[in-house]
Amino acid sequence: MNTYEIRKATEQEAPIIIALLKEVAACLKKNGINQWGYLLEGGEDEEIRQAIKDSATYVACQDDEVVGTFTLYSKQSEWDQHVWGQEENSEVLYLHRLAVRPEYMKKGIGRDILSWIDENIYKTIRLDCVAHNLKLCTYYEENGFSLFGTTADGHCKFRRLEKKQRNQP
Image 1 (cartoon, helix red, strand yellow):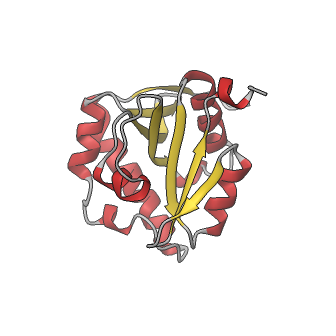
Image 2 (cartoon, rainbow, N blue to C red; image 1 turned 135 degrees about the horizontal axis):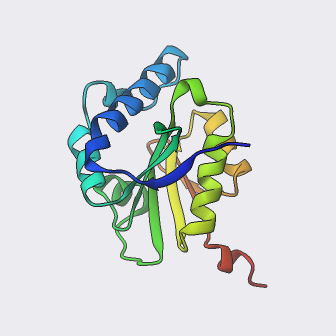
């Protein structure tokens, strides 16, 4: 049984979250996975700080330690527009930067975060990941997301409908 809480991140936690994301990016690179390399050069530090200020970033904490993080955007970023096309849909959130500290990986925290989102966020969730990361694509499918398509530049688009929409006949 995991004993952690999921809550909105505070601005004071920005350096911790950025460090966690860079730690995960370095782990991916070390394991030959070409994803999130831009984070290692500080490519999104300001965007991450802004998402925290905007109350869009969450943390999973265990014993006051941040062990995971994710961001849910209610409006499309430039990247979301690139992947999904420009749209305005207030019933959709875009999941970005779901990450678990490497020493806590393979303990079900990512799955529990996705379950928490499903239980507490009443909107359709969209996300994307690089298509060549088959393990991650499978992970999202195993956690209730459906493949919605693939972009010309090799990103899989996944979505999970809001719970009440999935339960309709």
